[in-house]
Image (cartoon, rainbow, N blue to C red):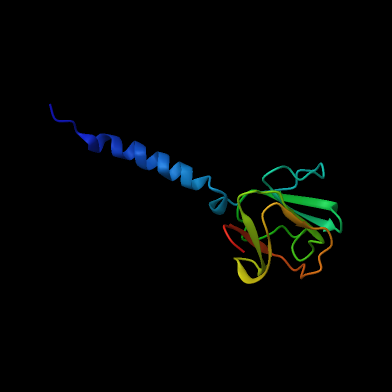
Length: 124
């Protein structure tokens, strides 16, 4: 008896599409967690040096940082062990300015703190 495999194709396509939609590089998820914590696997930007002030946390790309943090990140922490974070001077990932390596931080920004967007990547 011959099976019709085409019937199962839409389910497989849906599963692949769902998996791709939750990959860090494709999800724009920004939040102010309100408790000044930077959880494992997140990229975090603080308005004060040495991880003080307001904190914004992400898991995934963000093409337009919230006004409270854009061009005002005084310290950053990439708690991801799988991705580097490239930060851009403009919204929409325009004009790359710095990279935060995997599981690294800058307590005081000795580099430009003019971030407006970022992407998660495999390499700086």
